[in-house]
Image 1 (cartoon, rainbow over the protein chains, first blue to last red):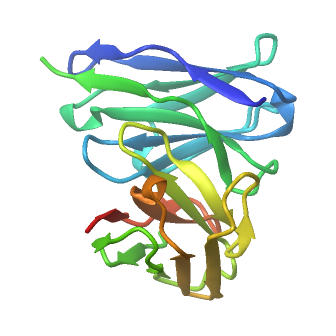
Image 2 (image 1 turned 180 degrees about the vertical axis):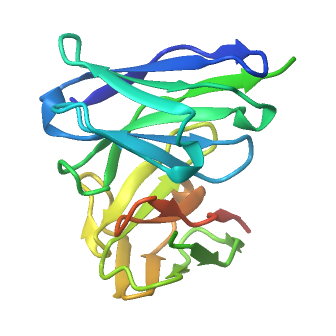
Length: 120
Length: 107
């Protein structure tokens, strides 16, 4: 079955960077976009951007432009999301999620989430 | 950016009840509206995509309707496992945006 398995929790200081990985299996990695969505504690869901695993092309939400970088390694079917210049309000659960049909923006399935805590 | 609102923000219901959650977009999004369920401590799960289509494995007591700017998620005969938070999401244009969520809890 399709699975997205993310890297473990991270604790970072303000100003640092974090890189989260998302290893996929059960489908052809290059066929479907990967999106990143985050959820602050007790809050709602916020879309950060997508990466096309085939071309490496990306589309970032303007809010994160200049701070986020999404990449992929097709040899190991893994996507990455790096967020730089971390602030306390970046503390959140970060999810990778596959697009159900290439570029439909139907998000399924979701990774288990990676908790990133930003604290001095 | 397209803003999404949901009502109510929370509701209490009993097993067997019919529950309706509404979602409104700040501009027309055609039928590009999806619904997700999130149980406590779990990742969200896609229930319905493109307004009406039920994702594989989702019980048929879930249904969606609407078009343009106004959409509805209906749960017929609420079951114990349905107590969760529900989010709508527009897939019409980036940045893709979610509603603030509707928490369904036990009366």
